[in-house]
Structures are given as structure tokens and as C-alpha cells.
Length: 164
Length: 164
DNA sequence: TCAAACTCGGACATGATGAATCCGAGTTAA
DNA sequence: TTAACTCGGATTCATCATGTCCGAGTTTGA
Ligand code: FES
Ligand code: FES
Figure 1 (cartoon, protein in one colour):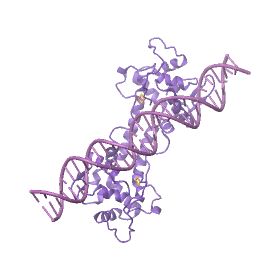
Figure 2: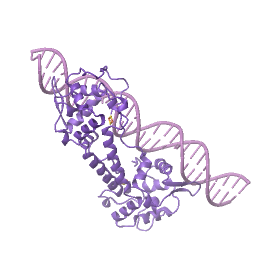
Figure 3: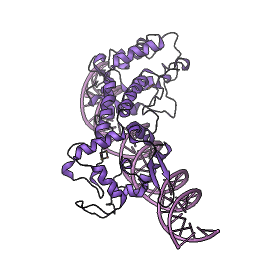
Figure 4: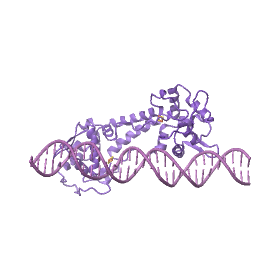
């Protein structure tokens, strides 16, 4: 979402400083986004990360699947094929009834996440704070000198960070 | 689902033997179902577990919430209140935009699970195998002597069990 | 041309959550 | 009265997510 407001590549360390989280750990997840082709990484002295697509075309589901993995959250262990009343393997080609139910729910979950885009989220936060928060963030990203009216604060993150 | 076919209390050990899983671990989760008031436990020499409600009134969501816990799967760590551009706490009374999106997806997931009942699942498996599987299970529960045509097998579970 | 500095990338410890287990309290049937 | 059998919570162990580190590669500037 922050990359939406940026026009130049943003290094992972800068994003970590902005969020007050561990830089190395944020880098790890940005790598996942890079593998999923959601962001493009440019190396070199003034490199960083850039969105590959316009934010309207990136859904929350894309982000979740990039980080969490595209595989469904429920896995069937086929206990129906075990024990004294075990079903024969040739009758178990299709997924079991419980799995079907869980997969249907999983589909509904993913469909809901697919409906909201990163751009939608940006508009949502702007409405929350009744202020152009993304614009202020863009300013902060350009030069780390804070604009007037915003309190400055040590860039060193507080100890005991709880990452996302 | 097996308890649907039973008319008398079924001990946890018997269910574990039927499924070929660890008896002690299955007992742990049955305790969770008991706490959620989905099953009622009767103690004593011929005790066991019985359903408290007819299977049409027990939804898959009830079971999932009983075992997994009713709290939503996503928790916001409020990173918006951290770093140099931290939002003031008085502006963070409502959940953030990302949390709202995740909660909406969670609701869709739960709604899908709420639509299917234990009775539905039973009918579904009967259709899968084109046979009255629940009736056979009821027979097996009554006396551990297998009916004709079903192969008998050691009640000792195989080592290296993978529980559910 | 060259070197230096800064970037990402994947491989490596650590902690927390869930999986699996155990024994004791309580109840029923004989 | 007793004896056996049931559930219940507390305990231990394995696995995965969290958090961290250093090396390969690229751009910028002299
Ligand atoms: S056999 Fe347990 S979910 Fe399919
Ligand atoms: S601040 Fe990260 S999800 Fe709410």
C-alpha cells in the first residue's frame, strides 16, 4: 500500500523504518512478493521495490497467496482409509465430504479477498483519517526530513518489536 | 458424524479404534466438543459420548469453532501506531482497513461452514459409497464382531499414526 | 576503467503454537 | 462394598512460523 504512493524504488530498509519493524524480516516477506511477481526489485545504489501492476489490479488475495502460499488451508489425512471399517482405496479417488465442505468455505474466503484491491485499501485509510495520509507518506519517503506539523522521532525502532 | 449413527453412549477409545488414531489425542478434542456443549459425556462403566442436539442442528461451523476456538484467525498488530508516521491512538478506536477486509472474508468463510450440518455430511458420504455406511458403523459399534463380508483386522493401530 | 557502496537473495538460529501423551478424579454397574 | 471403567485437565515433545545473518549482484561516481 505504501508503494502505491511512491514513484521511485523504495528500499526495504526504508519501509521497515517507516513501520517500526525489523528490516531483515520485512525483507524476507518482500522476497515472497517478488517471487509472486507483485513487486519488481531493482538493485544497485538507488534501488528498491516497485509495484509491477497498477494498484487497482492487485487484490488482497494476491498478497495473501504470495505470503501464505496458494495451497488451501485444510488438508485431508484420509482417516476414512484406516481402522477396521476402512474404505477401499479405489473408492477414495474423489475428496471426502468433509474436505469438500472445507474447500467450499475456502473458496468463499478467497472470493471475498479477491473483491478488494490495494487501491481500495488506500482509499479506505484516507477516509478513516480524513486526511491524505498517502501523500504525507510520499513526502516522508522522498526525504526523511519530516514536513511541518509532524513530530520527529528517533528512527531506531523500539526493542521488543512484534512483527506482522 | 459417527455419533449420529449411535443410539447408546460411545467411549472415546472405541472411536479411536474405529478411526485408527491415537485414543488419548482424540479424547482431548472430544473434551473440546464437550466444553462447547455439542456432545454430552456420561461417566461410569458403560459411559461415553452422546450428541446433545439432533444432527440437523449441528453445523460444521459449530465443530470448527469448538475445536479451533471462536476467535477470528487474523489479528491486527497495530503497526499503524508505530514508526515516525505513527497514527495517534485516539484515531485508532476502529479496526484498520486491512483488519476490516480480513474480518469480512472470515465472515464469508464461517457463513459457508454454517450452511452444512452434520446430517448433510452423513447423507453425503452415503451417496459417495452408494451404501448405508452409517448403518454398518452402528453395527460395528454395537458389538466389535464384524458382520459377514467385512474383513477383520487387528484392533492395534499401526505405528506412526498421523492424527487429524 | 575501476572501485566502492549499496541493493536484494537465500541459508541459518530461535520461540511459540499445536500435536501427542500421561495419570488422577469421578461415576456407574455388579 | 468393591472393582472396573469412564472422562478431565496438566504435562511433554515436535513442527512451523518468527526473526536474523551473511554472501552475490548491480549501479553510481570518481
Ligand atoms: S478423511 Fe478426514 S477430512 Fe477427509
Ligand atoms: S495495522 Fe496491520 S493489520 Fe491493522
